[in-house]
Image 1: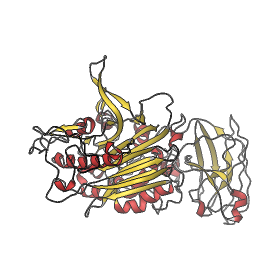
Image 2 (image 1 turned 90 degrees about the vertical axis):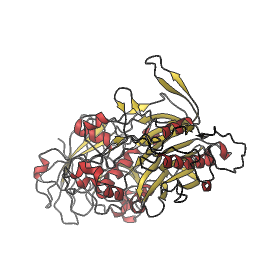
Image 3 (image 1 turned 135 degrees about the vertical axis):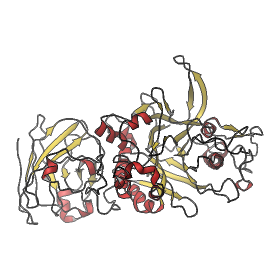
Image 4 (image 1 turned 45 degrees about the vertical axis):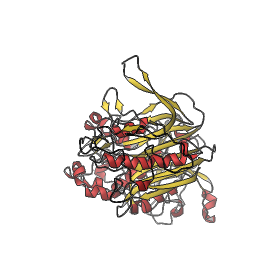
Length: 604
C-alpha cells in the first residue's frame, strides 16, 4: 500500500491525521484536496462509488476523539460546481468540481459520469457550502484502487461515531430494523435544505446506459436484505425515440396525521416494536433520499400534510431546482395534493379543483385535484398534468364517479377538445379504485352506463350492493353535463351519450397493465389490512383498439400515441413477492404505505 500524506499543523489543536490510499492496478495520478469542517470528526475506511468504478480510500485517524480504527462506507452523492464567494477561500476552492461522500445509510446520491481528470476536491464532511471551513491540511493521494461497480445512491451525509463492536460487524444500512430505537444517523434539523441544490439530475442523464440501478427504496432494500429484486424497468419502446425525455412520478406519501388516526393499518410496526419507523423524522429521511433517486421531472404527490409542505417538501424541491403548487383539502382537513415540476418548464396555467359543492349533494366531500399546463422551454411543446386523490370510502363509488366527472371536465376545458388548444395530457393520482372496475373502465373507454349500477360496485374495492345510482347524479350547481363537459361553453354542438349513460371526450391509456401474466395482480399499496392497486398514471393517446393475441387468445390493447410516447415504466410487485420479503409498508426501507409509480415518456 502506497501512503502519501502531507501533514500541516492545524489551528484547531487536534492531533495530526494520517491519510492513505490503496495502491491500484489502475493508477490515477492526481492529487485530491480534502476539506473538513473544524468540528471534531472521525473518518476511517471510505469507499467512493462512481459509475463502473469504485475508488477505495483508507483513512487512519489518530485524533484524540478516536483511539481505535473502524470501518465505514461512503458513497458519491453529488458532483457539482461550487463557487466559493469568500476571497480568502477562493484561492483554494474557486470553481472546482466537488465530490461529496457520505455514509451508505445516510446519504442522498446520484451517479454521474466521471472522467479521469475529475474530481479535484473530495469533501468528507456533510457541511453545506455556506458552512464549510477549509482546513489547512492538503492530502496527496497518488494511487487509487479502482474495483467493482457503482452502487445505488443515498441521502445527505451526517457524522457518525461507531463503536469498536460495530466496526467488527456488518455496516448497518438504512434497511435495518431498529426495534423502535431512535437512530443516530439523523440531522438535528430536518428543515436544513441548503445542501439539496442540484441533487436531482436531469432526466436525460437517467435515460443513458449508466443510470443508477435503483430508483426506488423498496427495490434497493429488498435486494439488500432478501436478495430479491422486486421492481424492474418494463421497456415499452426500444431504440432511440426522438424528442425530449419526461419522467413522471405519482406518489401517495401518507399524511402523518392520517397515519396517527388509523393505527390499525400499521400494527405490523407496533406489534414488532418498530413504531419509530412510522415517525415523520424517519419517514422524511427516507423520502428525501428516494426523491433524489427517482429524479423525476414532475412529481405528483398525494396526502401531503399542509405544514409538511411548507417546512419540508417545498424547501427541499425548491433547493433542487423545482417549482411547485399545493392544494389543501377543503374545510379543516390538513392534507392535500402537490405538484412539483423542474424549472425548465414554464407554467402557463394552474387550476385548483375542489370536489365539494354543497352538503346536500353527492359532491359533499373534501377531496381535491390539481391541473397544470406547462411549456417545455427546450422544445416549446405544451402539455397538461393533473393530480388528484379521490374519496377512499369503498361503499361510495357514486361520490368518486362525481368527483372524477369534475376532474375530467376541467382537463377537457384546459387541454382537451373543448379547449381550442388541445395538447397531450397526463393524469396521476390515488383514485381509490381497482383496475378493471366500472370506474376504471369509464376512464379508459369513455363511457359508463347506469343500468343496474349500484354504488358499492363502482370502485371495485370489495364492497358490493347498495342503492342504485341515478344517471342524474351531478348537482345542477356544478354545471357539468352527462358528457363530462362544462355546460354553456363556446362550443355548443356537443354529442351526448344515451339517456342512461355518461361519457367523456378524453382518450386515455394506462401506463400500467395491472396484471402480471405469471404472478397475478400487482399492488401499489400494502399495509396491515390489505394490498391493492389504487394508484394510476393515465396519458393521452390518439386512439385505442383491441387486438387478438395468437399465443394465448387473450385480448390486448393496441394504442396509437400522440405527441407523448410512453418509453418505459417501473414495474409494480405482486402480493406473493411482497409476503416473502419485507412485509407491509411503511417499514425500514419504504417510507409510505404506497410506493411510487414512475414512467418515462418522450415529448415530441
